Length: 126
Image (cartoon, rainbow, N blue to C red):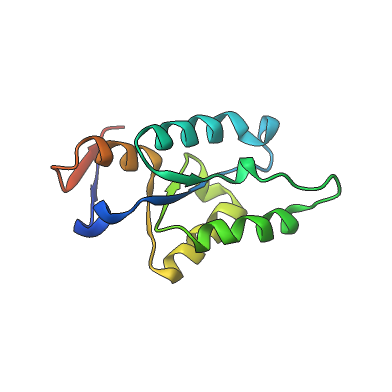
């Protein structure tokens, strides 16, 4: 069991950036990003998801990161997908978010919090 403390002013967050692993995953893990973005939007968040960035045919990793960073810059919080710690890009997005003072929480915590805003802690069972 992991206990995650939710800051009191997290209820002010409306804009989220969805971060997670893409490189090395089948179809760049788009199914996880699509599901996550749909769930978060269904809970009322505005979501920037990098899987929705349309790059050019010859774009490399750095090109996509440059296109994604404005989404991090405009976000009040980062929703991370499973496996994000193994992703160089997701770690860079989270580092930038921390520098900017944004909240970084697992996607399921953002969803649970939105559904149960009366609680200031969330217990996740493994």
